[in-house]
Length: 251
Image (cartoon, rainbow, N blue to C red; front, side, top):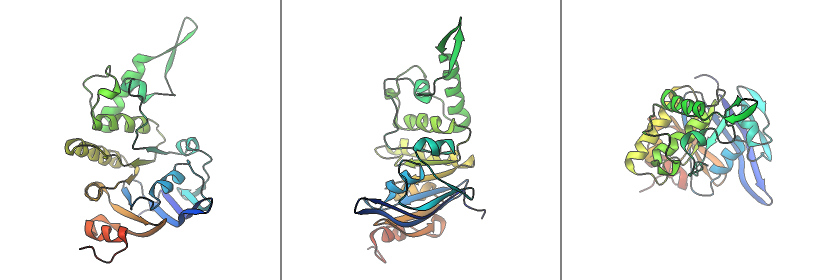
């Protein structure tokens, strides 16, 4: 196997007297899905927020392509090719998909010296990225995003992230939470599509069934520490569940 695209070494994060992470190592490879699992309070969210620049580690280092990186903010991480789609999706429901796709980064054009939004180009780019990168076609780009299904909303949020040409690592936080079986299947297919394009996908999920459906490896967190990493092809839901709860076997 090639060298990891992302390496986190000795990551410790303290909030006052509370240690949320203690000496965590993590490797993520291009073209793979790495799942991070664990109970509430295991440190999953803190770990990905360190990776995406939301938090700065108290101790430890992050390497991207073997180079040590320091992220002062989430914007720094995005600039270096690391982005996240959180459970909330951060979509403006009253806006259409194209407006959400370019929210904060709107495309403009000049007309008689005035700067105007280039709605036509944003719509065309949204349609292109959804189809070329994700294989998704929306029936209408005019409808507000709130009218879309859960899987379609996920597609818009993912499209917004992958539109950045320099994206190399995509973190997905509970992407199938509150979705029905059909929408879950569509979202898992989106994850596989992104993986196939050579990105490192880091999936945080409470659903071990979903994890074993799409992940290549599973990183298990318990009480702020990594307690093991397994290959899904050589492991089982039962084994990972035992690692999560700290038991040798779960009846």
